[in-house]
Length: 155
Image (cartoon, rainbow, N blue to C red):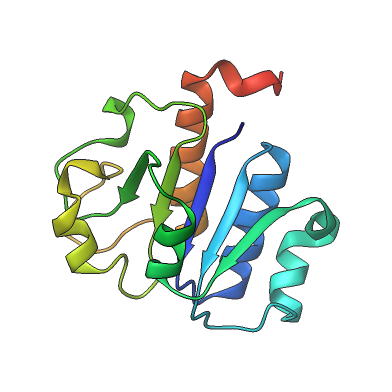
């Protein structure tokens, strides 16, 4: 199996491209939920992902309902700044899904409220009301999950 990265309504093509590249290099799957802030043939998206696109395990969904309809009974986590739960306290399992929201707004509030016990965050100072870049956040949590799983035959 693999870790599954889910991007809900990504807006910036080079972030999605960088995440796609990380997914390829870690045998992770990428799930994209529409709408996107770019076209999938965007030159910035392709440049950030380099020539890795042909190796990417990618699934695209029309919306959150489509995602959950096609992925029933999954274990998932919601990366957000709106929780006290720290990502490194989670015991990740092979096949887990990790959701990340769009760059300007994060994940939908109602999703976070509905699944608050699944919400996780990366610790950072709160005074600035800012957060890490989406691609960086994704990489931090993805590698923690992989570390816990002994890097799943990557080393």
